[in-house]
Image (tube, rainbow, N blue to C red; front, side, top):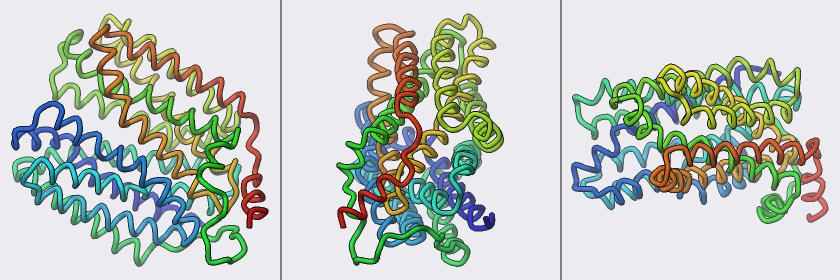
Length: 394
């Protein structure tokens, strides 16, 4: 297997998420400058995930029909346009539309996952899904740091910098990114006949898609509420909270980039996902019980390890359970379910936190234990089954 095309994909996704990370921390403060209420800020932050909920499966399906490269390049164009609109926005409505546009074209991750599925043998897939996750994580680690360095120039300058990165990334992709070889369905001039509804209803994939939603929901519940918990219990200020999330992101990236490939060959993707889910559950129970910041950091580290194991393992299992002609559709649905969790998770977690600080963490722990059960109940991946169904439909 050639490694250079995969390296191009990792770099492309890293730069894409780097631009996203540059503007994300300061986005609420920019909205406040236009007189935003808490509801407006929540809507602006949710707009990306809500639009991705729709856009990811559609772009994934398009990538099955026309190829991974065109969809990745289209996503980069969408990123450049959305960042430009963000920098030009002078009203809350335009800011909301800019974030929705970014989410609608935020299909580069699903297309990149499908690219990896096309270009790697099944036994190596979890490793390379992990490397992709590490590239995403590093974008979120370095992006906010670069955004902080650009903050003296103003938010619009940072947004235009992100747009410039997206344009440069597009040009890099035009010259460096090649379409992967993959098993193709017979040429009919149509998209794969396997519908999104049939993918959702498939007993194996349905369990994994629900697992993706629940695991993401549990993790974003922590992200949404730990600022409150950290301030109340440990006296964390915004700078300290930022360092905590850099710590969590660095652990997730290290686990996905280094540990996943080694463990997957030993215990398989199912074992990896189940182990990661149990580790997440234990960490989520321990976090609100931690009496000191040191204990909380240990719990957060364990949570990051669990998340770092679960996410690429579920992506690999989804890929291995679908045929070559529906990889993009399936992985796009996975991104859509994750986006749905990111859209509703913070709202539910915040409501539960108001009722009692431990509640969002205890709910998250229960949900990831359900994930462990669902993955175990799903059984071994029915490799090629959906491809055969699609061929029969045609």
